[in-house]
Image 1 (cartoon, helix red, strand yellow):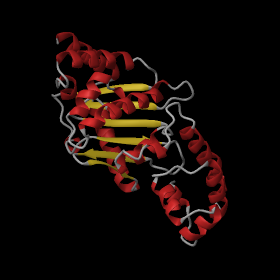
Image 2: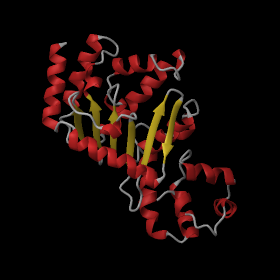
Image 3: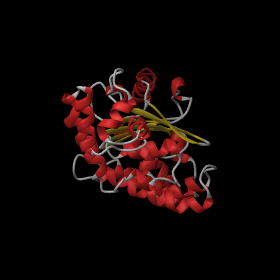
Image 4: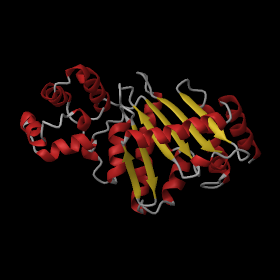
Length: 269
């Protein structure tokens, strides 16, 4: 559950703020995921809320995020759009990612040249910001190779993402080789939805589900459009997206067949 869901209705923002000796605004940021509380702050809030049984799990999650190799400190993300800033703040602590991608290869699996081509064409990314955003994406990929409990990543993507020449033929060829290599990792599963198959519920666009392995916590859905990104934490809505994941998983090629398709498309370029 989120910090907002754990706070009983009888306990106000003001009371929570007084417990930590901070502003109500800071508590709001903790509850929205915009800012990450210190482990000691979490312990104090759990004691105040009477939910100490979840203290260890939440403290462990917060510690993992803060000690992540890429040093995801939200105070350094001021130049990042709000929705994506929240996503980045949560990303390092996620236990699993499931992404449905239609037009491009998922960000955590992109090569530097491919990511540069994607960023260069994004309307919401200024030209002066492209290099910084690409470097940020490359650092984030470190979590896939984390020696201590790396997250499970399931990437479901349309066949068109493998054939679309983002950045040109050589860039795509390199990208496909990279996908074949990364698919060999035990914590990464790549599944392709071929042109011959249509999953109607998946036609509405790409999304990412982040799971945290916490009891009674559905995780989050991240959506991105022309103007930026937004997080969804409504459990019923998340269930709808997870139902789409089930449909896609049932229709997509298995891992070995997907790897073969990726390799063959790359060799034909």
